[in-house]
Image 1: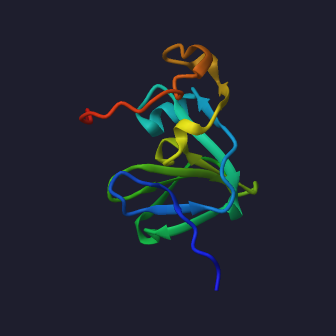
Image 2: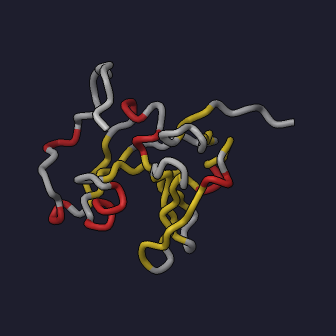
Length: 139
């Protein structure tokens, strides 16, 4: 019997939950137009991990896929719409949508990608550091 892994992330509704055998080492900010449209935001926070490191704990039936470009699937929760990860069929990497990770604030920002498509400047991208401010959500 294998050891139970702690939950590492979840979608907005909590229907999709996952653990990681290997934690991501860093996050990346992607400013490409495709990420802007998929996230409905100015940029995407992504955290690549080896595909075999991702362990789905719950919600397999809730996962839906959208092929946003040839060979690239964006996977999301069909109940709440949270983007969960993206992957290319020809790579061993799953790119997590890092905002769903419980420890995202502990991960350093490695780089900003596609900055020429940025809708707003994110200088030094170190905004993830510091305490979490509790308050109401603004959805």
